[in-house]
Structure formats: C-alpha cells, structure tokens
Image 1 (cartoon, rainbow, N blue to C red):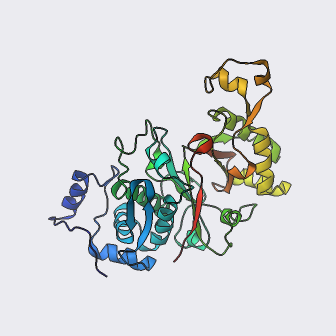
Image 2: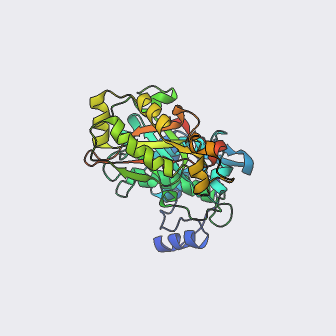
Image 3: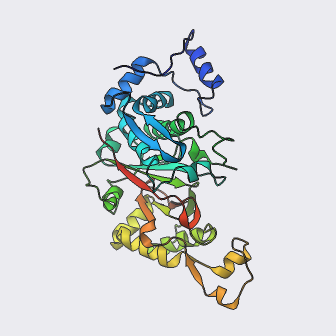
Length: 343
C-alpha cells in the first residue's frame, strides 16, 4: 500500500506534536502523529486504497482521498475500527443536500452533528447514554474530531479564514453520538431514512448547540412536549429553520413508550404546537415590518413539515432532561444526510 503524502522527519513525539501545531494542523489539542504504519492500518480497517476518492467538495473543487481521511483519523486519536464511520460521515459532507459551503463558512457557526445507528455503534462503544454530549468516550470524541480535522486540513475550513463563525460552539471539536436503540420506544432512526435495522449508518446535520429543557411535572407525552415546544418557539429565529433534532432522553422516552406514542406522533405534535406568531417575531426584532392586527394570529411553524423534526432516542436513563438542536440556515439551509457505514 503506497502512500503519497509528504513525509516529515522529527526527533521525537514532542517534536511531532509541535510540528503539527506549527503548521496549523491541530484543533488546539495535541494530535497523534500519523506515522505510515498507523495510516496504513486505518486504511486496511476500511478496506480502502490510499488514492480512493471518498468525497468531492464541489464548491471548493477539492477531492478528499482515503489517505487524507486516514491521516486525520489517526491524528484525532481514532482506533482503526472507527475508520468506516469517519469515511461515511465525510461522504455525507459532500452531498448536495448538506450543501457544505453554507454551514462551513457562515458567521452562524454550525457544527457537524453526527448520529450513528446500527451494529457498528455497539461494536465500537459509541456512547448513547449518560453525559451524551460530554466527554469520556473515545469513539464519540475522536470520530467527530476526525471529521472536523478533515474539514480543517483537507478542505481548508480554517477559523477566521474559510470558517467565518462569529461565536462557534463546543460541538465544533466533536459532536458525535449514537442512538440508544435498546431502550428507544421507536424503530432505529436510520430505519426512517430507508435503511434496514441491521445496517449501520451515520446521519450528519449542520447544527447549532444543543438546548436542554427539563420537565419533571408531566407524566404524558403532551406535557413533556409542551415544554419542548415552548423552548423551541423562543429559538425559532425568523420563523423557520430547515430542520430541528429533538433528542429524547430516558425518563421522557419511558413516558412516550407507556403512552404508545410513535415517532410520527411526536413529530406531528411538535409541528402543530411549536409555532410562533409573526407579531412576536416582529416584537423581538427577528422579523422586520410594522405589527399588523393579523400578525397576532398568524402562526409560523418552525420547520416546513413534521418530517423535518429529527426525533432521536438518546441520553441518560435517569433525569427529566431532553434537548433540541436547531439546524442551520433558515428556510433554505442545510439538510441532514444519512449514509451507510460500510465495513
């Protein structure tokens, strides 16, 4: 297996890490030096030749080779068996529905939120439970980080240059979870995207930071989702985002299961009830124009259709917290993309 990337000679491990800092190849944290042996092992785990083109970013006219993905996966600290997940996520970045240029360069500051489903999530130990968006799991931390390093080092999405985010958020380091398929009241999320339960898949979503909400007072789906809708209306921006993810954690999952609510029931309820009045948007200066009498009764849905609410079961089994994650870009913004993970 012949690698074509440029070689660098250093005296020791510390020198290798400092070289990566000097050349701007890190996200601020130390990286694992991508030796030939490590890169070849990463490629072998995915069954890919170095020159294989994983993705082509149209607006940047950049081809992303398997070798470059492997190098950045090594740098991120991935184990070799994570490589197929990273490859599938990078493939998704190039999908026209995701529309790489907008979310990657906008001042709005989205990150690549990743949801992994299927046997591979369990095999590699991806966290779907406690401390869902927090640190502590190698697979979650390094897979998401590898995708961000590919964006930085291969595509050139550098903060302050191509990446013009005003604020950003911590998900730009890594924003990767698995769905809790074992305890979920619903079929696995990727099944809703046309895959079989026995397949593995990754969904990427140009996402703002997660918004946590709590409801320990209700024992019904309507009660829990009333709280969710109240919070989502506040974040509705100019009246509509392309999509929202709703991450339903353990105790709220149990409430849905006891009531027999399907994922579609949740989508319909939120779509009908998380609506914001045009008058409120104008009063909040999120929409221009004078307030007219009819604006008080003109309600805008936060997404175009119920299907644009991505309902995912994940998070700790204890606690009355769940979260929603706004998408990026207004009505015409980026859309989520799901790709099969091939091993």
